Image (cartoon, rainbow, N blue to C red; front, side):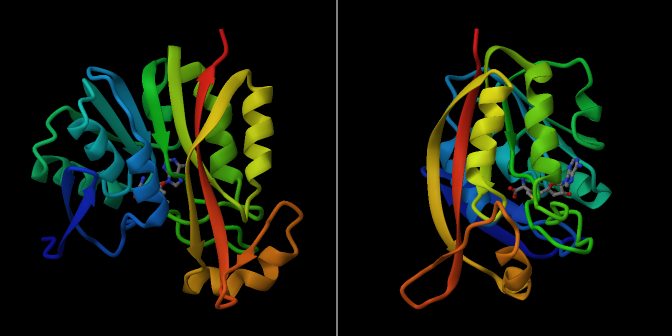
Length: 229
Ligand SMILES: C[S@@+](CC[C@H](N)C(=O)[O-])C[C@H]1O[C@@H](n2cnc3c(N)ncnc32)[C@H](O)[C@@H]1O
């Protein structure tokens, strides 16, 4: 059914993925997060909004004991199941549902997520739409993390400058979590964001930088946050 295969390298790891135009293809932030995953081995991992299954597969290959990968999109769930099999990542369980609903009352050592963060005045595809200010899904994930982390557990989550990096930092502090930045990237706007540039420039929390060719870019930071004792 799926014909197109792509290979992504993360450090020494190789991940093979089927592609489907209905499912998010791992891009710059996905690869940045993947390069920030650090596991001792045996951890219970949640990948919330798994898309193709990419981050769950990386966690599995890095030694996670088990991994629950969730997504609200049925097409993503089907694709993630197939990709887990393709990579012999047999300890990944894929579940469909909104935010933390598929893992109610469950605890994890590591929660990873690459939420949709595109701000837009009108709805976009579920894989990119972050609400009017881009923070709709991101904030919900931040708020729910406490309830799903084991003591000492970590949340690995990015924020892009067009939705306010400092807002994530203040929210983590307010939620009783300590944090550090473990990844950083500067990425030129793609076609979708170029079309939204004038809207984004009016958002109070957004910041855009311009590279030496004067292309608009966003910066992305990956936060690693822990529950304070
Ligand atoms: C930016 S993509 C990231 C996909 C993948 N983690 C990666 O990095 O390649 C965001 C994913 O979150 C999913 N998603 C969006 N809203 C969601 C929600 N409320 N609950 C669960 N998943 C959601 C989308 O379907 C999409 O697959």
